[in-house]
Length: 339
Image (cartoon, rainbow, N blue to C red; front, side, top):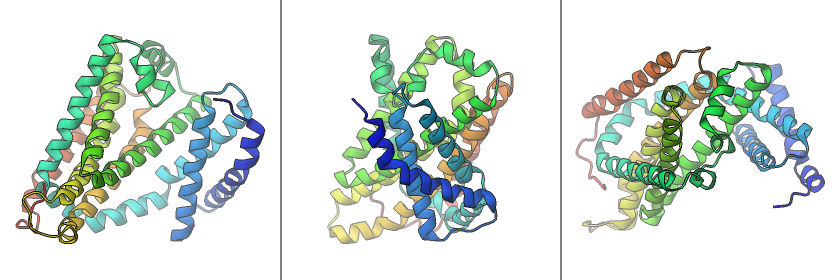
């Protein structure tokens, strides 16, 4: 692929400048509120800038431009994950749907189990691919950071923290968070393919997880792997699975097996649960993004791996209790299941 840097810069400069202006406004007044249209515009500009940065990652040219975009993306993710606006959004969304998430989860438990099975099959398949061919990860993994030597990456991460590494961590976290949101939305949307697309996407993400996990385990970096993945992954992976659950519920409604209802009636019956499950996914991904940016990306000697692993396990247990026990007391227990 050949990139005309001059044309690329001229075409995208307006987007970067507009994002920079909005960030300056937010940084000048942290208590400022944005209306819905401005929030949408900010999110659009941020995603486009992150995509532009991703396009430049594989090119050695224009280091100053890459640094400028890294700075914009890092500032953007700081606003998204660390500002009082995010806290207000999280609390508001939580108050709206928090009580109904476990009940919807329990009603659609069959779809969740199917989502788990699809991802686990992907994990096993990814591990098998890596065992057969070590170069598999270069073709499968979406981020260049993961395609290199695990031991070299661990040594670099444990070498220390400076301003340059801080910015890289925020940029990498922002890329992951943007990717995670896209995957979650796509997981739901692919339910319109009668659930087939949702299953394929869950399987593929399982393949990525299997390749990464086995790669680090074979390199003798188990402590780093679990200390890095568990703090955010114990929430992020269930969020994907719940998004997949919502997509499979939608797919089940599209199929309408063993149901004499019309498609419109079936979609109406599942719409409330789908919205609730997607709300739960959003809450989990926001939390996972915050943890990833400000906790997961720090390793020994800054934060002991044992502490990080314990934190991740505690999160997973809390989520399990919330979904498995609280959900049994949820309302609407007699709603028709479309699993």
